[in-house]
Amino acid sequence: MPLYLGSKFGQIIPLYIIEPDYWKLPDTSGRQWLFIKDSLEDLNDKLTALGAPLVIYKGKAEEILEKLILETEARSIISHQETGNFWTYQRDLRIKSLVKKFNCDWKEYAQFGVKRGLINRDGWAKKWDHFMSAEPVPTPSSLVPYFKKPTFNIPTQEELGLKDVCPGRQRGGHEEAIKTLNSFLDERGKNYQKGMSSPITAQWECSRMSTFLSSGTISMRETAQSVWLRQRELKHMASEGQPVGSWRGSMSSFNGRLHWHCHFIQKLEDTPRHQLEAIHPFYNDLRDDPFNNPEARIRLKAWSEGKTGFPFVDACMRSLNSTGWINFRMRAMLMAFSSYHLWLDWRVAGSVLAKKFTDYEPGIHWQQVQMQSGTTGINTLRVYNPVKQGYDQDPTNAFTREWLSELVDIPDSFIQEPWKWPDYEQNTSHEYPHRIVDHLEAAKKAKAQIYAIRKKQGHREIAKNIYDKHGSRRSQNSRTKIRH
Image (cartoon, rainbow, N blue to C red; front, side, top):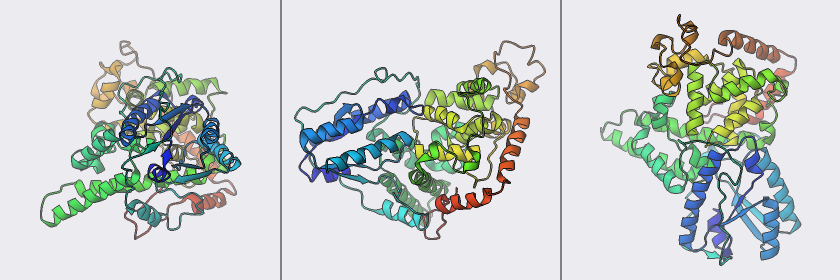
């Protein structure tokens, strides 16, 4: 939408501002930047073909915009509406003050089914369907650039001070997004519904669209409408007696996840401080802060490096460290393990985890961090048993062995609980750490502390207010039902 509308004004500046301060934040990383870099290069090729190459500046957004407004006498800024982390929220407030000062019009257009200024969730699902059903905005046939020789200088990872090694990360760009979406709809998505829970099958059978959606290299509307088209094709095939197997269930499940995506971002849009404060105030400052607690720092480091002594947890973390992605269920387990078993402050552990995700989407991430930490006050406690998850999601131990070479000598029957192997203490060749906590005792203690808070006077009343503002509404007319 911004590009299409901008083209109607005559001369335009297709602008991207690289903000070094943003890339110094505890929840941003080199893998995220490299994906953006790929996408900027791809976008520049497309804009150049239309006649107006991408203009890139590096610095503080408000200072660069002020300079451009004064230099060009621009009277309109058109952008996508962003629901980012708290830092971007504060930056947007500064830009609003800036454009008001110069009497410059700033129009922001939604890119997701997220409504700014929402009072409650009544009718939200219908509005989502309406937004996604609209005709896609066309690409302009040509553009008229303001600058004849635009500035296009993309800094390297090193120049931004981002030391991050992620050899298996996804590559960015719209072409990669289309290729990934098509392969999911045509081939990989058949068993999505069943395959998304295990890290073994999820790598192939999940859509892998999250990184493209979070960076804006493909629109949610384009993605949703492609899914709906595929659903209509499958319905027609089934009506003619053609075998469709598990395709219809998988596409329905994925369509539900698209709703879910915007449902969670809406929560951060409505309350930007959810990155900083517990959704239910009774849970603020409940856990150990690694910045002030040396023992908590040790636990955080072990968790972050995949050296907790719990093989499946460590395998998932090492896989994430190397690839920048892991499936949703394992993200939940990793976060819950840090919050319940290791009793780490969710804000610190959440930032560490955010850096590891190439597809970091603040609106989804911080809501999930709080849900998996039990700080929302309205959700069921999700305390994953790290040993049981290993048995359930990695029954052959193939995934665990792939990422934990230290356990090569440990028999399959003990690999998820190596401390039970009779020869564990005598065999020092594996160099694998002892489990950092007794997971059963740690979980029991954590749940007791959370439930004690839930029983406090006033907890229920605050929880009801939270649900009234952020709780999902189920609609019979909606394409899918949304759950917390």
